Image (cartoon, rainbow, N blue to C red):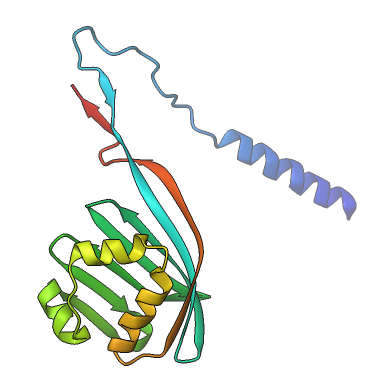
Length: 167
């Protein structure tokens, strides 16, 4: 009985070893006169993590901001509760569990929050030392009771897209 298991194991290993690819990547140099790759510039991102309690529900989140370009937001509690994206001219918010979505301009967002908002205002709010209090005030303007604690802030470098440019 034990011999049967050993034979099956040896056959399985032999079969697995025999099924590997015979093709290998070519290691040839680029032809002469071909364009050379150039490193893409690096962009600094500010990453802010937070813990929030909204209407008695606690969640954690992360805000990533590329200065003067885009702000990403993600809120989770075991599963993703919501995500958002803000650019210079538009805002997109999604709360799939509540089946609520918003895509529009800052003028549309101002009508909902009854507060003057622009991309510069959002960027200043995320980067401020009192970001928690500012977000709480914005939530209150929208009719939510919220408490926000900033748990961390760091700067990271990332490559811009595309990762390599050709000269």
